[in-house]
Length: 215
Image (cartoon, rainbow, N blue to C red; front, top):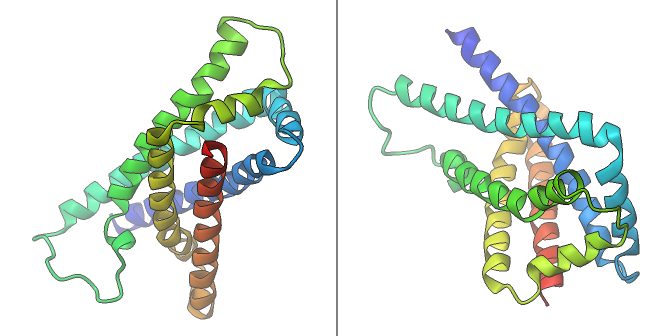
């Protein structure tokens, strides 16, 4: 039983690291939409990602599987921990943060946000390319991104709030993922600082993009 729990935590950690690598790549691509070239760089990269068969038919399914696997494993671990407790803890570790005590809450909000994100961008992309079968338009991506945020204060607030929770989730998840894979000890302080830097960069990076296109 103990080994089963360890394996689950390691699988959870590996899927978490995989998703964190994707987040950096996704953020860097979206940051190109801030360049003063009227979206030319963003359109070029987005077109390549959207029409490259390796990205579309190999990497994208792996990513979608990784997302749902991570969340499912999170729910399984949370349920296992709940069953293992004989009584609900009232007093938490003094060093525990809100994020570490409420990973399941932030995770659920992020999952709901991902559904909105899929609805905003992924589903229209599938509809455009595979259902309606429109001709390729290399210049449409930047316009579609701006269209989602310009003048839509509700959507922008939802995105920004979700990115703040994502940052809190990443701050704890980053260090705990590497600790689950055996990285700790002398590296613990370094991991903590790296986790803060990573989570702040990702969270505020996405917030800046949303606010930029809103205004």
